[in-house]
Length: 326
Image (cartoon, rainbow, N blue to C red; front, side):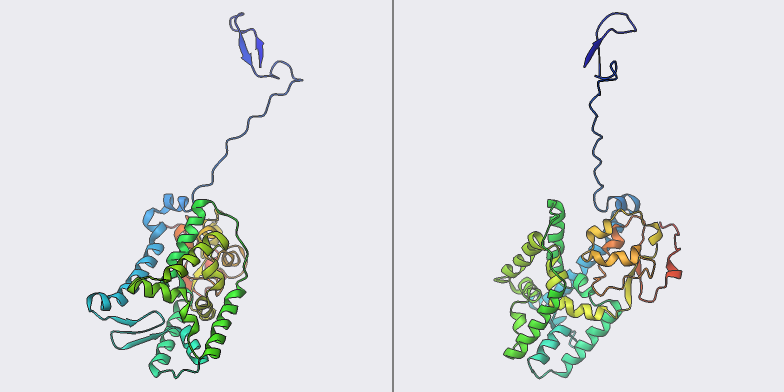
């Protein structure tokens, strides 16, 4: 600072910054205030309100809880709606449902497969060919709650780094599960399957299942972001094969309205699938077999870029759709 006479009074003392009187002396630069990035979904919350920024997340949780209650109603209250578990069940005594991955293990183990199991697998396959194979992962599988919680905790703790793991490992685990079934003649994978263990634990008591569930949670939290569902789960790999041909798709219908807030990338469990549809010049349809149809991109987008559609949506039908949304 330099002391100078106050020109308004001709007397007194006024402090002026260094360099104001002597050009040879440079004043120290003042740092600009740091602008914080808005919280994920904050723009959507302001533009659309709470319900429209959370609706598909809440609907998924309600669906997962309702499915568990269908199985719990029998042992809990004596009302047998669904018997069995997510791998193999009979609903209302007439509708068989069989997990395709379980069927593959049974065939590899050379088990005699009942006709109802084959019919159940066909029904499940047809359903997910319509709605998207990995919709099972986001809307049905109870482990999704665990892995989503781990992803949320990572964001809250500011954990940005993590190990890299190829998606190819899920195919390795799928092949290993089938090979172990063939070698042992048993459904060996089901002994350590976290999905089966968690559902059984929620219905009948966790026991040692806590170790498997905690292991997946900690793995996703501290080692590989979205590591279990996105890179390892062989059930997810099986449903991804169905997803390759599925009819229902997420579509970046209003991609011209995107203003690069990147909130969709932050919440998507498979963020690499977004860019071709969102920023590419071809189809706006997310065609990747890894999309889980969780619709979180739709929830957190303040511009309503994303919507549900079909695999047959053409660029000419969608690229110029910039109609305002309520």
